[in-house]
Length: 323
Image (tube, rainbow, N blue to C red; front, side, top):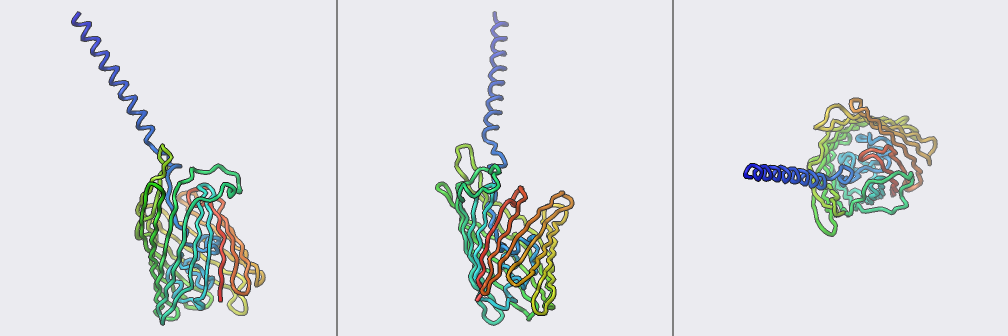
């Protein structure tokens, strides 16, 4: 009897352990959040024209690129009274960002520019391509950016960009800060060189948990160093073509990201743009395209990045007013 009783106890213990382990496995499976329910609330700092040119315009002084791509650019602008508005829509997460860049304030060799914007959910009808979306995060984000550029000479300037973001929903509030540093050298009217170091700080991220609640947090931004050059042809009368190149080293990953952009202006009104970003080691190729309509006091621009991959499935429209 005693042996039979001990045997029953042993069997019971084994069964309880098996049930416990299976229960723990189920619990672990439930708390693991799929990657598609996580994301980064990236601020699109670049203007519409720069994005269409493969984000290769780190040195493009004469295209009036927004200071987000290189804060040193505003140190050598010929006309500082430029107002720029951009709206960016990410297809797979349905997040929309609106931003406004105010005119640059110049005092002697010192140049100050401010940019403000917000990110929120878009409308269901904005999924033009009919592709399945990722889960939409329940979050809003406000951001403010201030750039300072110092023109050492007529052809050389330094700049720093500081950014603050505030993301929130009904359950959480989160602040982040990051900065970029840039250099610009323009020895001639038809050529310029630029360098920028990005990612000094944190960026906001989110996670949609089992209950459907969007939690907020932050992580260190990926730091990168980018070098580039821009060429314009010709410089007499009217420029009809510009070519931009850039190489970006993202720290923490092997290899180099190569960028290139071409802009053709067959007349004074129309601008056709195309660009690409590619990484040989990762076998990634990201095409982009855009169009611009120029008028007397500014331009209207549109671009699209149709590659369905992280951070690259979006389009943007921008309006630049120059007085």
